[in-house]
Amino acid sequence: MGFFCAVILIRVMCQLCILENRTNTYMDTKKFIILDCDSCLVPMAVWKDHTMSIRTEYEDMMESMLHKVAKEFYKDKPYFIDKKQNAIHDHLHWHVRPLNSKGLAKKYG
Image (cartoon, rainbow, N blue to C red; front, side, top):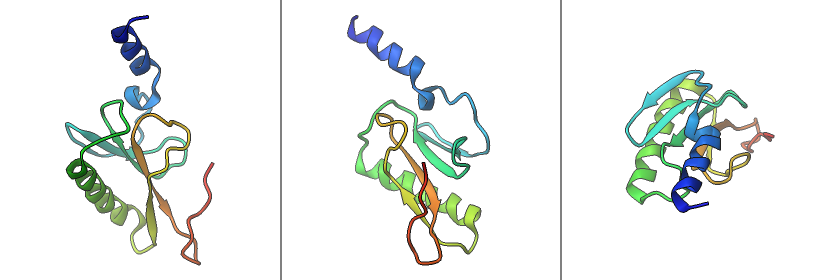
């Protein structure tokens, strides 16, 4: 299989490249989209290109916009941005998760 075919196959099979099930979309830019995760029902930011590496200024911009959405979503409840790739390991995406009453991250998955 050639490189071009491999790239096409990744994009066809990657759930985050396809984003078929879009529940609530908060923001859609040329570089990333912020929408509700259909698995855990919290906001998540997804980089539109199939990569795990982006420039620092894009990381900062995406994180800033995700904080903006999180403040609306959680109102006065504490939250954190989870940058760990759990189910999909090779496509950059971050979830905004609630903190429990002791300031610890709630367990997901």
